[in-house]
Image (cartoon, rainbow, N blue to C red; front, top):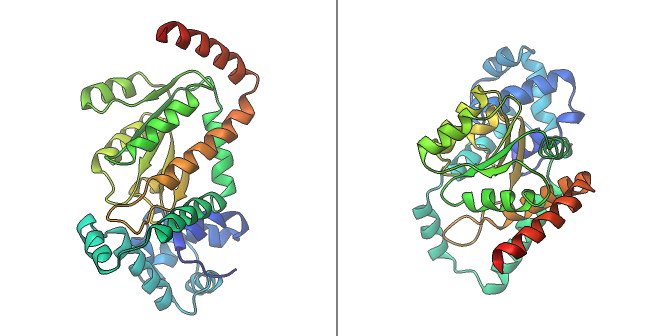
Length: 281
């Protein structure tokens, strides 16, 4: 197993190939990422209920020569995760990218995001979003809410009971209050993670809702209790992170869901088109 730039993606994407002991370590790491990996070997081993040598072997399997190297990588990720918009602006002032390099960067983002979606997470998302008896709600932060709305616009044409969670607290609370156990909350949360989104998602989880998280490679804190985690590349060579990959991943997931909903989706689209034409004319 070769090392990759991001440890979280490797833990999520390769879980099916891990031994039972390795899965225990991976789950402990992801439950408090990246903090759990910044503790001692003994502490991590104790939390995962495995031996210290098992932890070291697992770290070696991930492509690191030592636990120290592993922690250095985590510290680098932590630094990137907490980078402020102001810092990004300062970094970009030092290197002005050309139009061509910016375009290539966006293409790389999308390609990398799509080919690294963990298959297990993808299939779980398709199953949840394709369960037409369940309600789906979507929410996001200041910027990622664009992708949440896009998810709703995609799915609402395919199946019933798809809603954008209201931004006002009282309306969001009332909407969640009317949900049932097993309903789904799709959450978009990327770095500079939203405390508001975290509080909403925790409340939804306590109500028995399933959580499908779309996040970045550094993982939102919501990843520690989400049922499905789908990461995407958001780094860009501009002052702000990019939403392009989040939108691409969203469309890809929705396309996969659509393939499971025929002929229901076709019947719904016919009815929607008739109603839309009446409303628009």
